[in-house]
Image (cartoon, rainbow, N blue to C red; front, top):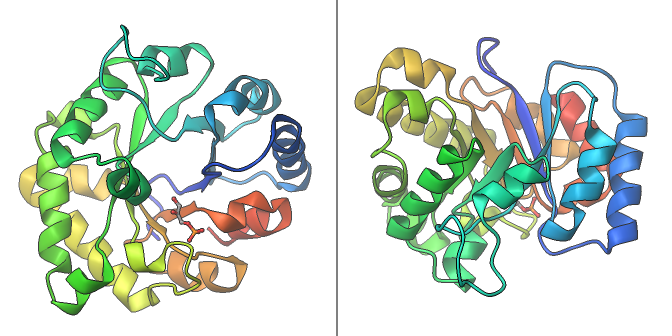
Length: 253
Ligand code: 13P
């Protein structure tokens, strides 16, 4: 982990937690958290955003994030939520391109590029997810696939826009499976991602880009993963639903 870059640990609650449970979880995290330089982002379902904003408001280095947004600013899109709506309830970040959105909701790189533009236009920082499925890794094409996801989803941005983006590498085969990428596998991909960013933008931009690891990250493996030079924190699913585990992961960063 490099000291120049923002260290970030983001919790992705996915579709979990009733309203009350979410409020209790956010309060428990705050109770247990020790002050540190690591930025903590709680990416909650939409219904929690307002109440969690009230809870984290004023706590230094704690931010609110959403898990998706629509690619249009407003309009007749029943059931959807726009970037300006998220901003208006206090969100700072939005996860875009999570593999579950790509897989279950058919989100393509092209659609994601438009969502990234919307988010940035309204002052939200995208946490842009990339990662390969097991068969792609077994075919030795994982670096190529991640390069394609970055090119199509992000590399149309101007350097000053790109600076607002956080990248999350989440190998699909490690998500919710208990099978974590080894620290070496994570480092290898993170280094590859940073080299691609340096080639497209400048080394200086790449050096400032936070790249998070996600996929079965837990207190027992966080220290080793986060100690890799190009791993700048984590995007945590299951373990972010337990205040104790999540705080332990934050403290590993
Ligand atoms: P798990 O930590 O549950 O494997 O989920 C990772 C993830 O998808 C975070 O976005």
